[in-house]
Figure 1 (cartoon, rainbow, N blue to C red):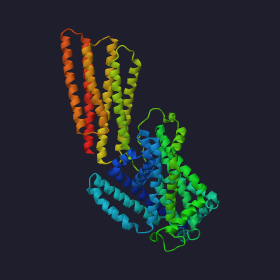
Figure 2 (cartoon, helix red, strand yellow):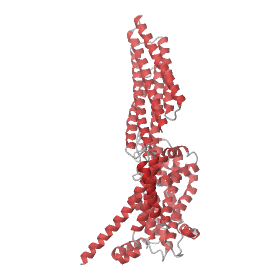
Figure 3 (cartoon, rainbow, N blue to C red):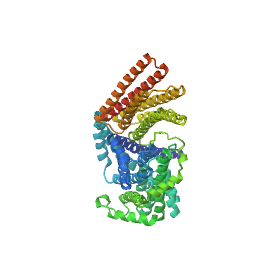
Figure 4 (cartoon, helix red, strand yellow):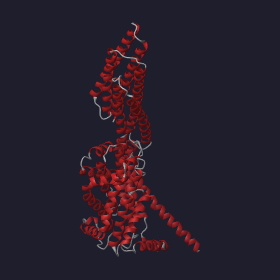
Length: 590
């Protein structure tokens, strides 16, 4: 009989644990699809905000706050910032304030959890899912994405409500499962029996909890729920102590959440690693000053709960559940807000510190474009900014390489072997960039993205392929010019000027092509078409002139080199017009 009761106890404990995990799973899945839906609806605007609204520290903080509030994940925002820093889209001075704002943005989750106890979750969650479902199945593009975001939002609330109901009340457990309840009480008594040392122990518990669930939002939900159900002590006996244990766990969660960005920066360049270390530094400094002022700071926050609106508070003045939940939310928000106010003035100092911490050589050689994502929230929609900037760099390198080819062509009397080697290195870099960008875009395409960005990925794949073929052509021209000098095949002034005229037009077209990757309008496309037509006419007239000269007895080998260079120039122009047309169609479709 004893074994039967023990088996029942183990079975009931396992069921209770699975219910908690299931509730947490609904919450995390809801957060994931809500974040992805929001990105599909507002991804381009969010990306523009991150890259364009960071000119001042205040704007950077606000950008991080609103972005995190939308996607409901500071991990996603900080990983995105690290990703942008890796691509050079954000400088370190711009990235640090955004990370600060992300920390404040994630505090909204605590307020949502605190509000859960004030109304029936199903009265909000299920109707929201009901609104989102037909939009998701019947809608297209952004309408479908709005439905997805609404379903995710409803699941977040539903998951939080189920989590609140599934975490057992310790007082009730003493009656239904006294053995397990007594074990939990003994663990809490051990952790809480070391005075100020208990604050450190609960903080470590917060770090471990966040590392396990890989989400500070989920860890916050678990913390508040456990506090409400008496896992940190009896809230009717010593509410302040229960709140202080919750606050200590929250401090640990602020450190634990930095690990995601740290891991994302592994293998990235030095700038990305510095952004991740800045996130860690900012949070650790905040935790240190908060630990020094822990008791007066938590007492002040606890006192603020007396000023909550009456509708947020329970009728019971003695340690109501609402007071514990809202005190934790107030603590989380106040701690991050004060930390920002204290440290936003020291962004240059933090930048210098992490620059010394992470040396440039730690980047590991050439910068590699690498997909970075959060394990819980897919940032595929926003990650395309990296591919955009990489494609633009590839176009700039193509322009620089063509300039180098013209330089070699125009200086027949100089030893330019070092310059030729440099151009060969550029061509190799373009080959590597094609591989990296293609792999990156394929990785992005395997994640949840909207139809507009799916089309954008297809366009970028075509653009980088055309650019790589253009650089191959340019390097072939360099080798032809090199062979011309080695064979002492001198061009007449007419031949030289004809190729320079055509080369100048091609150079103009390359410049239009690289600018088209930033933005394009009708005049840009018509201008490019005019240039390409001129190049085509010059190629035909130059080849006819070469054929005529050969008929009149000119050196055939020299004229063949002339024709070869002439045809290569026209081929490069064709690649550029393909880039411009692709960019134009992409811009119109988005």
